[in-house]
Amino acid sequence: MDYLILSVIVSALIYPVFGHWVWGGGWLSQLGFLDFAGSTVVHSTGGWVALAAIIIIGPRTGKYDENGKSVALPPHSILSAYLGGLLLIFGWFGFNCGSTLGASDLIATIGFNTLLAASFGGIPAMILSWKLGHLRLPEPQFIINGVLAGLVGVTAGCDAVSPLGAVLIGLSSGAISYIAVLWIENTLKLDDVVGAVTVHGICGAWGTFIFPVFTDNEAIFKQLGIQAVGVVSCFIWVFTVSWILLKFIKRYWGLRIDLESEIVGLNVSEHGVRSTLLDLARSMNDVKSGKDVFECDEMEYQKGTEMGDLAEGYNAMLQTIKHSLKESDLQREIAETAKIKVELSLEKLENSQAGLECALKEAEMSKDEARAALMKSEQEVLKNVDNLKQIEQERHKTEKLLEDLSEREKMSEERRVFLEEQTHESNDITIMISAAIERISQESKRVISDISKLADHTKIMTQQLSGLSDIAETTRFLSFNASIEAARSGEAGSAFAVIANDVRVLAANSSDFAAEIHKSISDFENQFASLSQSVNAQEEQTMLMTDHIKSLQASFDKITSIDQARKNLVSQLTSSRV
Image (cartoon, rainbow, N blue to C red; front, side, top):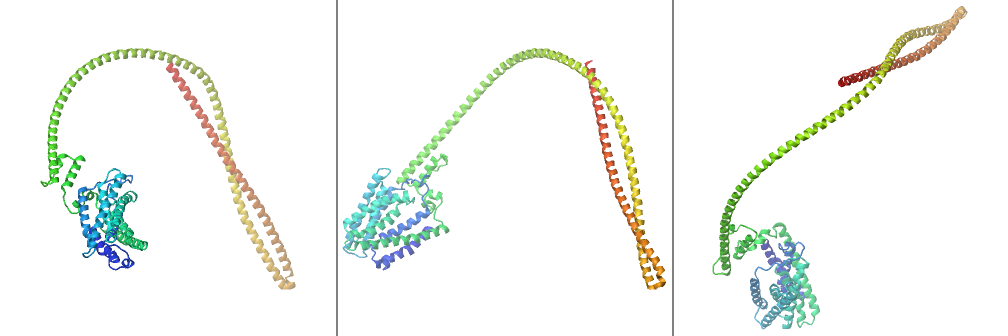
């Protein structure tokens, strides 16, 4: 599909537009651009489309190694390539001569120039590949490309150049075809499979640009400028449109076939065409890759053809190999059977030998066991003797240890008696101190109780003094009222005023005396509070001292129990010795 779309766009848009510019009265035609039979209009157009295609599609699988070096992929058939080249040469005469669009004397010149360019185009390609190629041999694919490059180069001016000019155009185009192929392949890393970009694109542009040099045109440099404009405009137009179109096709339809289709070829994957040569190559590749020969089918072929004869020979070879393999399998089975029988006989012999060796080993083991038992008994006796010596030594050590323990026991007994005496004395002292502390504690509690009672009486007295103060205030208020009434009564109330004054003085003295008593009671309460705190602190110290005495008593008891345990241990050791 993508090939058909590209063909339609090239035929309907790219080629017609540029053809109109040159041959249809377009701007290049008006400018004076010359291209008689289409070196640029036809061939460069196809070459620049091919350039855009190989850039976007990429190289064939295996064209470049892991280091990026180009790998030579031989052509499918040199004979077919030369047959196609010869057909193109023959057709070129009609193409170039027919571009006159009429019968005239110019046809002979065109045909002669076409033949000269083709003949001389192959010479430099042959020499360069011979002297510069890695094979150092004239390589046929470069020769035929040189011939075609000469034809493409002369097409633009085959009606105007001299025969010498045709020869020079052919020579230069042939040389360019070889050099440009290496440049595109090794420098640009583009896989130009048949040299289409070089032969048609570059050599077409070269022939279109250079042919005015070999004509009778007086304004050569002006014409060369016009030719350059036409060549560059062709490249810009064709390459740009082709690039955009191919990018669009790649995105929505795809351009690159899968690897399997690439290996079997487009004739098979795209059209289903079978090729005896391809089938033969695939079958031979299967055998080479290790596929079972019995799974390889024999080739179908057409008798009387070269490929038929080759396929028939291959089928006969397959039959011979299969027959040989079957005989080899039969011989292998016979050999395997004989091998199994020999292995069985050897196994029986080995079993007999193993039985004999087993009996000898058992006898040897019995002998070794008896010797080992005797040695073991001897070792046990020696070991028992050593054990008796060690027991005797341990007994002496134990007796010495018990003697030391006896001496230490005597010393410990004296210390124990002294410790018991000290412990009894300490216990007596502890009991006396505890009793004294208990009495102090009870006395402190009694004092605290008395202090509490005094505090309660003090509170009652404080309340009574508060009542007395209230009475004194009330009396003072009444004496004040009495003074007012006496003043109002005049002389009749003078005696009453004196009494009221005395009552007021008495109320004031009573209030002052009550305040002094209240202050004394307050001081007394503060002293009671301080004394109560002291007694409480003393009580806490007494309780702490009681705890320390109890802890000391427990320590004495623990010492006594430890001494008793030691005494028991000594007694046990003494009884063990006895």
